[in-house]
Image 1 (cartoon, rainbow, N blue to C red):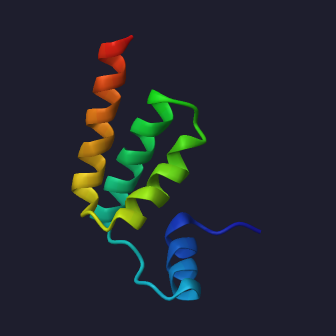
Image 2: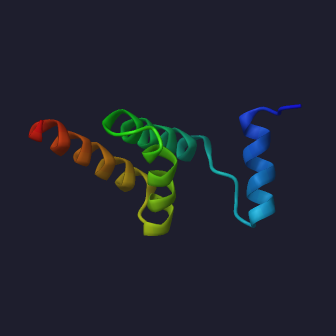
Image 3: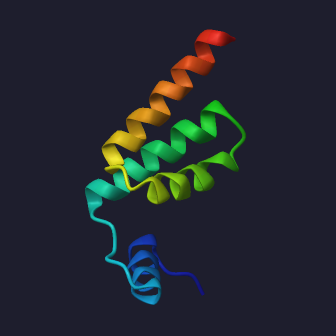
Length: 77
């Protein structure tokens, strides 16, 4: 049995003792993950999200940092 992402996130957040992400936070995380997945190997996406969380930066700033890095890498190619 699988459950939808919203229910998974609510339940997982409760298990690990943090609030579930808002819709805006989810959008920013998905954007960050998308940039990481397209600029490198796909495995960079979840780990980049983890790094963003550990950085304690606002998600918008972390997502912007990911976009900047992607642009830097593209410019070097």
